[in-house]
Length: 125
Image (cartoon, rainbow, N blue to C red; front, side, top):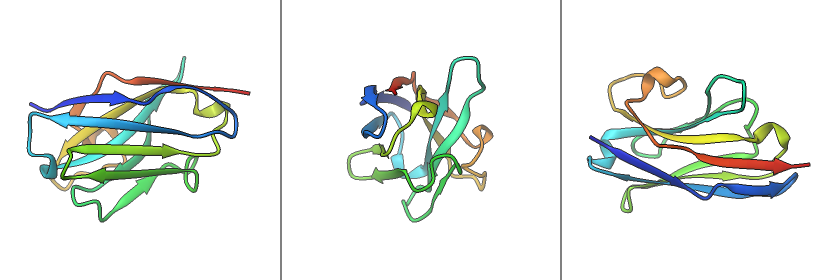
């Protein structure tokens, strides 16, 4: 059983930056691909970014490509999401997720087995 705890959310002005962190425990971290999803009020949860177990492969939603960067530190069991040039469309609850290495794509929620509780990100215009 993997536990995921997100941190780093908050209020930021449009054009600003935030860095989200996710601490993982309870499993062998390198057995898991990791991802970030978000859910805005009244909308479905959507994929933001994913990273393979080794960190050698990453993927992004078109809406964040070039602005957000996902990374991981396997020595610390941590995954990060650096968010730059934020706009109001980035306002959402952000969730960290872990998916056991099994050949599943990390671009969709079906590729993940464990979820964090989420952290709120609000971008003011």
